Image (cartoon, rainbow, N blue to C red; front, top):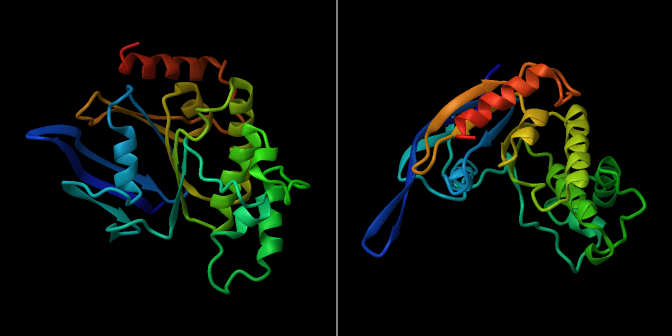
Length: 246
């Protein structure tokens, strides 16, 4: 399987006055086309900074990122970010939010396409609702549909479910897997939740404290759906937590 994302020797420092704070200390990794890779690490280690670099929203001081073999110099139309902060426009309906990114004339009936993706994420019947009329879990579904409707090849997900309660978090994980079975994407997920990574990912990368480097990598061989209570996943969880010093 060909590599979709290749990260080579990426380093990043931030300056505060005369001080230089090293954040990313030299990260190299590759993500295959269609692979789901989760990245975990201690709080403040530089996970989100690394995601911004890999998605093109931050420039590395050293190293490079390749998407399909081409150097990434700016955010690529091949990828879209789903973050923990939310990106739904409160003055637009669900349908209008989903249509917002459908620029140009190559999308056919934009309203029908938006409604298709609303239905895909379980929002059929809420197409004309405004964000203020939706629950937190429904708003997250709108964000996912907004990302999918433009048909990205890569989903960059930065702790997308962290603001949800535990039950809704579980539901959204299951919903995401169902969607990924219908539409194939390469996914890079940043999360602080080891169980979330085990439930979703094909491979889990553990980052060190800042300045972050890759400390360990674990393949998750179990097929979906997975039972987190299985002995194999519990053993893998213990190994990942040990790498995190827990």
